Length: 213
Ligand code: PRP
Ligand code: URA
Image (cartoon, rainbow, N blue to C red; front, top):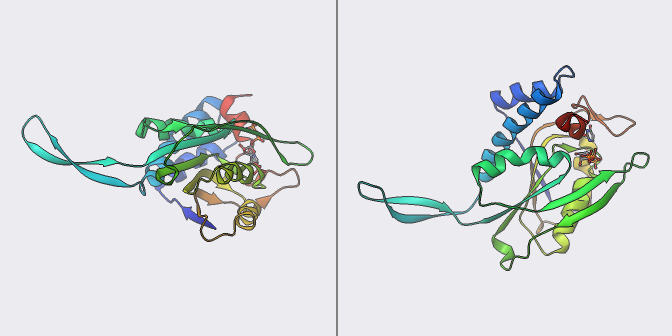
């Protein structure tokens, strides 16, 4: 079952407008996307489990809080790498799994060429966060989540800048089960897809604009 969580913040609107603007060059695009990754990370990490601990400051005993979940970040290559910075800077203990997928140009179907996921025993405590700035047809995200589901993983979170309504619909259709929850954190669900599978108004090709290719 898919749940959409919209993030609204003046800073994210400001940075997203830089990304949407076709005049933004690749290094300013990269800088704005890196910054947006911190906003996404703060919101996504807000539901991590935590516990109280006893510690000592240089002055006295005190109570502290630590995160108890294991976090696995799953960036979808290439553009998902652009969201790693904030997630890793704020929680360096996270493990990074990679999945390589590109869309075949004519069919727009996802082609998976790489997947590496860590061996972890206690699957219940894992908080999986799939990173991809764009959900267009939804094909790449569906394939990624299916790989996680095949491994018996359940806590699935998605960080994405922009989605198309077609992609959200496809994800909801692919994962209707109530006991398999997917929470998608995004800044916007845009108008639609064009006939080449690009999100409109969108921001163009996220990977090309981030890497300058
Ligand atoms: C882009 C984007 C997503 C995918 C979304 O990747 O980063 O992974 O398209 O499209 P979908 O929802 O229709 O699957 P792309 O295929 O351009 O690969 P790249 O990042 O390697 O350029
Ligand atoms: N991938 C992108 O990078 N942009 C789109 O608009 C659609 C898919």
